[in-house]
Image (cartoon, rainbow, N blue to C red; front, side, top):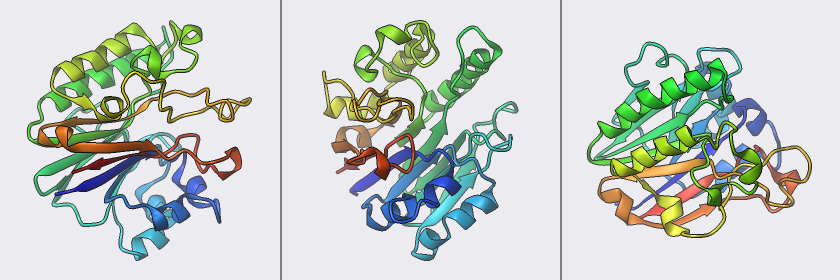
Length: 262
């Protein structure tokens, strides 16, 4: 069955939905996506439901996982149909309540929304990021069947995935260990479907700093991925980053990454 899946870091769901006339709620009114993975909601489940109330009234189903620390993280899945089952976390006591992983079943398809730590090289924050990646890797490689893991991975996999890659050598998000972790996930059978549909080109970037003229100059990072495993990986037929036409029309510092699967 054909599916359209989107993923986007909303950079605060209340802020994203509060931008009237050009915000997330208006995007939800026109998107053709069947399933949308959200990251960095920065809200309790109750607050997320309140922020998305117009969309829920219009028929969207919400599966949220609130952050364990106020104002940080938080993930969710919006869907046109109610999931058959929802699971939060992946069985790890350190991260299950952190609001960084949720997965939902839709028939034979499982979709996960993931928010990986930003990290900071040579600090405890980076150590925590690597611990999370280790547990996440165990979860992903244990899966079978059709599975799409979407999210903000906070890792630029290759030089093509970051405009200023030379200036970010040795910094979190472009560390050898992080990039090697993605290599391992790919070797385990996952396909970076956006890269497979846009081979050997810079980007398409999905995050741009609010500072300077990064957006206007398209000086971004491609850190929002859809990693697919199983038969669905070969059914990806089109992928687009829904980049706003101008800076003023952004409702997040990330843009939705949307993939059509046959």
